Image 1 (cartoon, rainbow, N blue to C red):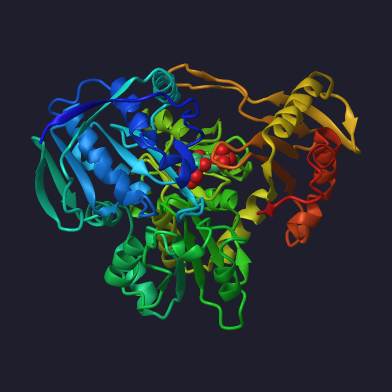
Image 2: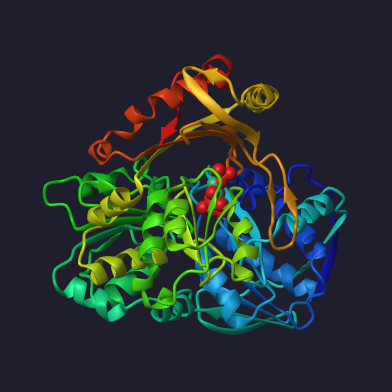
Length: 543
Ligand code: G16
C-alpha cells in the first residue's frame, strides 16, 4: 500500500456555511469533490504526526463511502490514529464527546443534520477542533481559500477497513480503531443526570415517546432510555438509522415530526414526547397536548438547572443566538447571571464555553446544549427534561407555564421561505439593509421602531468580529422581527423571518402564536416586500 499524490482541479463552491459544507449528494459524488475539501482542510491543519482524529457521521447515504475515503486521506496526512464509529456512525454530540474524552486533535463529522438524505438528498462535512466544537470561522475561511487553489490530493491506495467490526486495524501505518458509537457518550450522560430518579419516573408509569426519525439518535436513545433507564420497549420509535431516514425529513419541529405531534395530541397521549434530528444534536420536547418552543426550553432548563446533579453548583451564564427569543435573558437576569447574544451557529458558543463564561446555550432552531460537549445535544436535552420532571414532580406543560407566569411569555415563531432564487434573496436583504438607517424612531405598519441594525458580534474572548449576522428590527415594546438568510440550505436561498412578542399578561398566555404575531408579520412584509420580490404568498414552513 502506498500514498498516492493525484492531480485535481479546484471547485469554487466549497465555502462552509453555518455548520460545515452541505451540498446535494450528487454534488459530493462528483470526482474528487469530497477529496478536494478534505485535502484543503488537511492542508490548513498543522502536521498530524502523533495526533488522533475522530471520524463518524449520521449514517446517511454516502456516509460509508466518505468514511473510507477520509480514512485513506488521514493516513496520507500522517495521523497516528483515527477513532471511527462502528459502521461509520457517530452522532454529532458523540463526536464532540469522543474528541474531548480521547484528547484527539479534532474530528470530522459527516452530516447534513436535519436536511433530508438519500441519493437525491443532502450530505455534509465539517471539522471540529480539539475542544470538541465546530471550527471557528478563521479555520473554515482558510479551508475555503485553500480549496480554491488546490492542485493535488494525497490518498492511500489501501482498500480501507472493515467498518462494522470493533477493534484495531492498520491502514498504511496509521492505526484505525473502530469504536462503539454509544459508550463514551453514555458514560458522560451518567455523570450529569440523576439516572435513579429517571428510572423511578419510568417505573412509576411515566410514558415517553421518543421519535428518532430513522436517524442516528436511535441507538443512543434506545441504549439509554430503554436499556438503562427502564423505559418500556417501544418508547423509542423510528429508532434504526436509515440511509434515507425512511423518507422522513429529520428535522424535529412540529411540521416535520407531525407523527409525534399527532400522538401527543391524541386522547391517550404519553406524558412527554421528544424527537431528535438527522445527527441527533437537535431536539424537540412536547408535553401532553403542549408543544414547547425551543427558546422556552432553554429558559426552563436554565431556571431549574440546579435540580440536576451536573449543574447543581449553578450556571456561570447562558448564551443564545440572536434570533432566539429573550426568554433565557429574563431567567438569567432573575438568576443574576450573564446572558450572551451570539450570531446563529453553534461555533459561536465555543469560546464562551471554553472560557467558563456560560454553562448552557441554546437556539431557536431546536438546539440546546451545555459545557459537557461543544455541540448541541438532542438526547442530553431530553434527559435534562426527564430529570426536571422527576425532580420537580411537575409536568412538561406545568414547567413551561411556570416560566411564563414568572417572566411573561415570549410568543415566538419562525417563518421560512425556502428555495428562493439567490438573486431575489440577495436583493431583498440589500433592500432591507438600505432601509435600516431611516427606521429607528419611525412607525411602519403601525409599529413604533426603536432600533434597527445588521447584527454584528465581537467575541468577548478573542475579539474576533462577525458582521452581517441578521437584520433586526426592535419595536419600542421590545417586540422583534429578525431577517436572515439560512446558511444550511442546499437549494437556492432560504429566508428566515423570526418573530417575537413579549406577553406579560397571564390571561393572554394561551393566545395562538400566529394570531398574536400577526402585526409583526405585517411589519415584516412592509419592510421586506417578501411577496412582491419572491411571489410567495405564504412561508414554506412556520415553526
Ligand atoms: C446549524 C447550526 C445552528 C443553526 C442552524 C440553523 O444546525 O449549528 O447553530 O442554528 O444550523 O442555521 P441556519 O439558520 O443558518 O440554517 P444544524 O443542526 O443544522 O447543524
